[in-house]
Image (tube, rainbow, N blue to C red; front, side, top):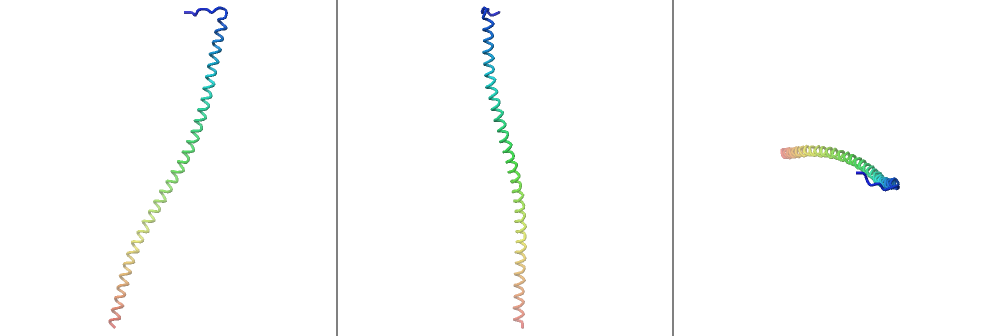
Length: 113
């Protein structure tokens, strides 16, 4: 069905109606563009922060790896020192036995003369 004609003012009324619609759409688009620009800005800021956090994370991971390597080196050094100490204790026991035998031999020599 065709709408009922409004008379001689019908074209003007339709034009006014369209203009109001275009104005509303333009206002809505301006608001949407503002929202889009803000969203892009927020996204860029988040990406920048994310990049910075990832860089810090990589630095901390590298530092952790270096610390783990240092721990392994220190553990190896402690093991080497413990092994050396065990050898030293064996040597000390052997030396004490030899000193004791030497003292006994000296005593025997002095008593034998």
